[in-house]
Amino acid sequence: MAAKTLDIQGAKSANITVVEDSERGRQAVQDVVVAMRANRRTGSANTKTRSEVAATGKKPFRQKGTGRARQGGNASPIHRGGGIVFGPRPRDYSKKVNRVTKRLAFSKALTERIEEGDVSTIAELSIADGKTKSFVKEVSALAGDVKRTLVIGNDFSEETKRAGRNCQSVLLITAHEVNTEQLLHYSKILVVEGALETLAARTA
Image (tube, rainbow, N blue to C red):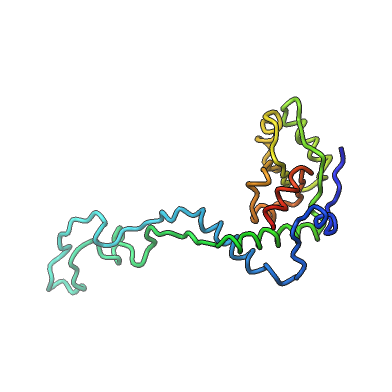
């Protein structure tokens, strides 16, 4: 089994929508990737103000006669252990992107990777013995010596999933689940021929 590089003509033959305008879709890709990363943020960072820190509330020294600036308590931000001024508070970082923009971004990212020669098609990927060693050997033979490999298919056998789940440099994912960020992140993309139809539907 050998990998065949997918070119623009091959993509068109598979009914994949190709974005031929070099400028069209760039902003869509930016918006989608930023939104995906923002949506992963928990927004749970939190600091306490002077009203929330644990302090006695007792006046540290008398108002007059000491020669020092007057102080009303130990919770002031100028004291060690006091409140934080303008510190982070829990917030929602999520962003919304409409479906048309997501589809355009997906098509643009896939088109650019095809143009760069980083997308190849394979007949299938099946590891019968379910061993990671066999999985790494097979993927290396198909993708070559690259840092990260993305394998896209409609489905994978349980043995193949078990063999690949412990390989940090390779990600097995279905054509329904793969997203724009993953298309841009991985050095090499292997697409099982049966998944081309699903990818075409997602770019239409």
